[in-house]
Length: 299
Image (cartoon, rainbow, N blue to C red; front, side, top):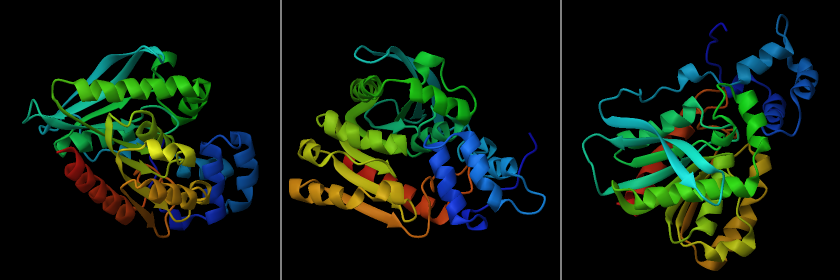
C-alpha cells in the first residue's frame, strides 16, 4: 500500500470522525461506513480512500525502537487458568535495572496487540518501568497484522474469559522477580474499560489505574476500588463521556482517590499516534501526567 501523509482530525468533518468511531467499535459494518461516508468524499476522493486515510498507519508508531539500548524486550507465554489457559504478551524492562521495578500492565484496544500498543509498552520500559502488554487474541492466533481482522477476532472472545486473562497478567507482574510488587494499569479504549474493571476486580493487586477514554465501572462496584485513578477523556467523545458524571459521583461518594481530565477539542483515540485522531499536544500532556502518576504511586 502506498504510504499516506499524516493528516489531522481538523481536516475531516466531525460527523465523519464520529462515523469512523462507530465503525471501529463495531456499531456499523464496513459497508455501512462506506455508504454513509460517500457524502464526505471530495472530488477525486472515494469513500474507500477516506477510510484508508482515517485508518492506522503503524509506520508512525515508533517513538521507541525495539532495539533501543535503554530497554530489553521479549514475547513471553503465561498461564491464565481461569481464562483462556495459555496466553502470550510483550514484556519490556529497562536494561539498567534487574529488580525492584515498578510494574505497569498495558491493555490494548479492541483489536489485539498491535504495533502502537507495543510501542507504548516500550515507552514505559524506557521510563524505568517493567511493562507487560498481553495479547487477548492469543487463543485465536494472536494479532493478525491488521486491525479490521483483529476487531473481528476480538469480538469472538468471551468477555469474562478476557477479564481473567488480564487478571492473570496483572498477577504475573505483581509476582515477577524484577517487580517491586506494585502494579499499575494503563489502557486505551477497550483497554481503558479494562483498567477500570481491574481496579474493581483485583483491588489488592492494582495500586494505580490510568484509563484512556474507557468505559466506566458500574457505580455499585466503585466502593471495591482501592487504587488511585487518573482518568483521561476526549471532549468530542460523547459515547464514552456520557458515563463520566455518574462515575465521578460514585468515586467521590466512595472516597476513591482520583483525577479526571477532559482534553479540549480532541477525539476518542487522541493518544494513538497512528491515525488522524491523534492530537500531539493532548497526547503528550496526558502521557506526561500518566508517567508522573505512576512514578508517584508505584515507586
